[in-house]
Each structure stands twice: as C-alpha cells, then as structure tokens.
Length: 307
Image 1 (cartoon, rainbow, N blue to C red):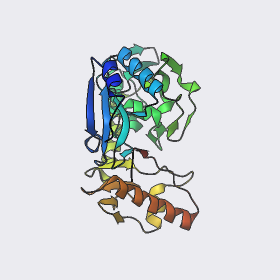
Image 2 (tube, rainbow, N blue to C red):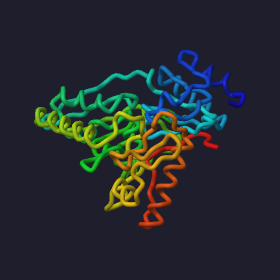
Image 3 (cartoon, one colour):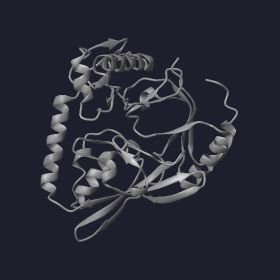
C-alpha cells in the first residue's frame, strides 16, 4: 500500500473513533475475497463523521461506506482511500404508532433483519419481502434492495443524510429511485431511515417470512460465500434463466463458480480472487449479449485496484 500523507488528518478527525490501517476487506465482504483498504474508519459521533467528510472532500480522498459487505467486490490490490463504517455510530430507534400504522426510525448501520424484528414487535407488517436479504438498512436504501414482491424505497418515508455541509432529512419522494438503485446526492452518507408501515396480521407476516426463508434455503447456495444475485434482472427476464440458457451454470474461473443451484449467484469455492470473479462475470455478460442481444448489468459494486 502506498504512503498515506493524509493519515494524520484522518486521525485528528477521529481522535475518539477507530482507524484500522491496511484493513483486510475479504473478511468484511460476503464473497470473502479482495485486498486491503488503506484505512477503515469508524467514527463514534455525527460530529466526528462530519469532520472527517469535510477533510476527505478538502483533500480529494476517495471513500465509500461499508455495511455488511454484500454486493461489494474490492480489487485484489486493495482500495487506496478510506472505507467508512457506521457500526460505532449512535443507533437509537424511534417508534411512532398511529391508528392505521406506524413509523420506525433506525440507523443505517443496522442489519435489515432489525427492521423486520422491530416492525413485528409493534404489530406492523409489509416488509416481509426483505427477509433473508443480507446487508444493512443503509445499503438496502442505496441499492433499493428487494425482490419481485417489493422494494425497499417503497417503505421509506424519509432519509437522514450526512454530507460535508451537514446533516438533514430528505423526503424519500425527492430521491429518484428505481429497480436496484437510489440516486443519493453526491458524496452523501445515509445515517438513518424512517419507514412507514401499516398495522396488520403479525402471525401471517411471520408465516410469510418463514416460507420465504425456506424457499431461499432450497433455491440459493447459502452455504457458500457470495454476493447474492450477481446481475440485475433485465426487464421482462431473469438473469439466472439467461445464464442457464447459454450453458454457463457451473462454469468456473479459478476459484469462482457460477452456482449449480442458482445461475445468477457466483460463489467463492475458497480460493477465488477478485479478478477470478470479474473475469467470470465478464464471460457471462459477453455470452448473454452474443446469444440474446441483452446487456446484463451487475448488481455488484466494484471498488479498488483489480490489476
């Protein structure tokens, strides 16, 4: 890793936080591969986070926010900027109940499962489709995570964002979003989300979650390190069906393999490098475009140096 002339400034911003140098990203990403981050920063207050954001902007230092590392691939040669983790930030929950429903406010660093758990405790339903999706609520917002049954931003009423200029709430309707994306302001970080959910049958909600998780265990290779879905579904199609149709189910590149259980999942057999995965995804995209004339779009976010 290169020398870090900006490190003293980062340490000053996070005098009460934690800074890990040359932090391995493979253990922090669900696909379990990738290089090191020059610095992994864990601010413990909003003030420290804002101070750090102002410094990073002033010094033109690349950064990204790390949740649970789902849908993230870091290059084998690492990431030369700053990775931000909100895991040490204050995470108070707020609950407001009304006659027909309620609003739940949670930290972006909380796992998606926390929303489901809190909702059920309050008699609120409607978020069942998020069950089993790995990652944090902030990540779910940023990529508008979901399934054919629904998407995250349909449940979000407002988003609290932090930028170098400060912190503020934004109405979710002001954030353009669609299939697997939410257009957040440049260099902004999701701090908290406010979800609006209706009251309903909690027993039925729990049964939906149970059936969905059982279906995932049956159809997805959950025992292997992976991203989950590697590609977005093209309109009117399924990426997994397309990949299977061109005979690539089970195909390998080094230690990376297209799952034999679900063709839109790329798994790490234990020795996969980030470059193995990139090459396998490129092979898939090339074959699909050649045989079907469809350009597959990755769900995976690539960061860092790959070659």
